[in-house]
Image (cartoon, rainbow, N blue to C red; front, side, top):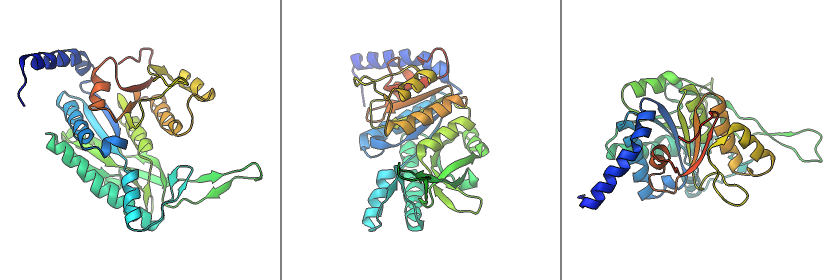
Length: 303
């Protein structure tokens, strides 16, 4: 594609303005949780892949962790396997787990690797079972009503939580100049597979890698106040206050908690960004304005 003089000047200006950010983050690791609209819209898929390849090209080490809930649901419907949810988590019996592994570990993971490859990058897809990258244990959940004397323990099947991450597997890929693409499937001590929330996996990966940034792509503009305005540059203490006063509630709470856990464990910055925007990752990394909410433990969170 050829550019006219004005377009070329605009491109040069944009690259020039991005230079301080490129210099600031070169050599650091950024973990990106990929999901939502960005995974199903062809234009957004291509822009995401180009952003990831650009990060690698300017010396940043991206690590991608992906979800795939809607795609899993679609295949379960096609196979006439009923989907059940408890506290927002998919009940995962053995048949459902087979579908989860097929969709996350094969279809979606390979598609992301191909997208990055087509954009000129070098990606390597793995599940948490490969090399026992993600050691998991069964997630225990409970339900309690005011009438109940004690909480009821609910068995939601092969749904897990992260017990540990073997960073040596990721380090090996990064040192070989690959972009790791990780499906959030864990393995138990007995070899059982576990379906794990992708946000939680991304947060734990960011923690063990001492990542500079954790970026969670969502289908909303970011964390919003009660007037609907996007909040950013937030300290951990301020986020705690927003949870206490009810500004943060419902489906946003798990993502916010994931971000808080990450920055409290040494990740410098956590971002909740609008994956519906073209080049959302690039805009958040390389511009002052960004496209979402930034949370940090540091005094100055504007980068």
